[in-house]
Length: 224
Figure 1 (cartoon, rainbow, N blue to C red):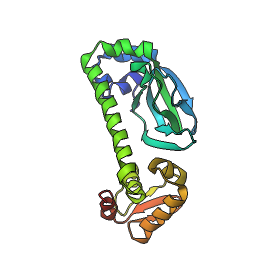
Figure 2: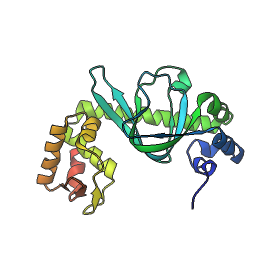
Figure 3: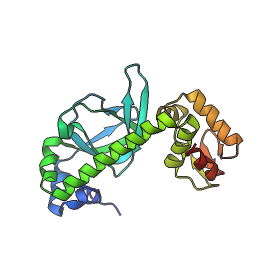
């Protein structure tokens, strides 16, 4: 059953604390936008005082280094609400918001959404929890780069992105470059590691799909 937008956002962890009248108001204030894969909704160091709801597609927080290297921190899919850091402190964004798959979003200007959220203490606390959780996820990524080899980081990506069922093939929707940008490596090393996983009986992989044949072996890599 198709839900109207005010009912969709009512399921969000923050908006769930608001009443129906607030949901309707938010629906009225939102504006729709479409983006293609590879576009940026905001750039790192921009002042981006907005929030958005992902209706379809995928977005990713990406950190860009001065030398041009890029690191995908994590991805967000339909039903997620993204809160711009600048919305709360007026400072530049710590990462870029990149479109990973063609997407449709509904967006709010800060001046429109903040007065509505600020009227409900539970909603404010929910936003705080989301931002803290985001910070902890970034910490885990940094920790992983510092202490886990590429094999462990790649195993973590495969297990978390594909949510595998052992023995069941799933479409392979990440390219070698996308994997490399996520685990902080090169496409050549990622390709070599994937073939290593296949050679050791952990996965079966082709250009279009991946099958997890020994999930426990992949999970062991997370602790090495």
